[in-house]
Image (cartoon, rainbow, N blue to C red; front, top):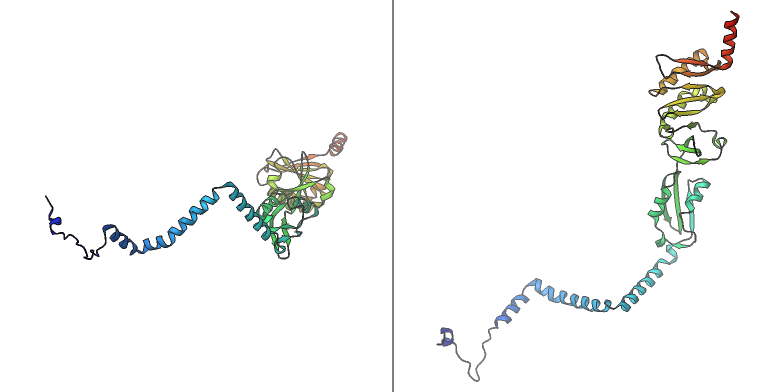
Length: 295
């Protein structure tokens, strides 16, 4: 039984025009071509996919990849080796000769070298790891000069430790070693375990002892909790663990008034501020006994 649509459909006869209406797929294609996104995809997307496919096939072969990498390396070397990118000299500023020699160990041995082969941040990091360096900047100056500007730590004291004499700065950081005390006799001497960690307190004590500065031999950290100020003639001032600066200032005031430290005294013990004591030298004790026996 024929459907209603087939009953009303006119069969094309010979010599008659075909229906100009598009087919269903033709209609959909025309609608897609009217969509801006689809047109852009056809115009640009298909060529990109085609190029990517060709490149993928070409790079899929190992020989092609090796040849391409070699071409890139040759081009890179040609650019990096140009004269304007070459470094031919080194300047180190702000460093003493010994420190400058240590810094050169982190720099290229052979010159000239391309600036592209220099890892400036790595060089700066390695230089800053040196104990004598507080800060450093590394840059390539126009003209092909590698400039290293160093802020060197300034030693403020000599620390006597078990393995020798070391220089320390105001932060307690070790800046180097010296073979003999006479090499830095201009700096005060500290000794003992924990002395370096209390460098700020040691410097304050040296300042408080300024009236007897020529007689000072050094500060010794006792038991990692308190200080002894050592003077010439083997005199010692035993300071308390708490408020040692104020205690030393009182001793200096007493010495200024009574000239106490010029006498035959071996030690002034002010660890207990309520009961300071004085220990006489052996010679003074002998004379005292003689005086007592005569009386």
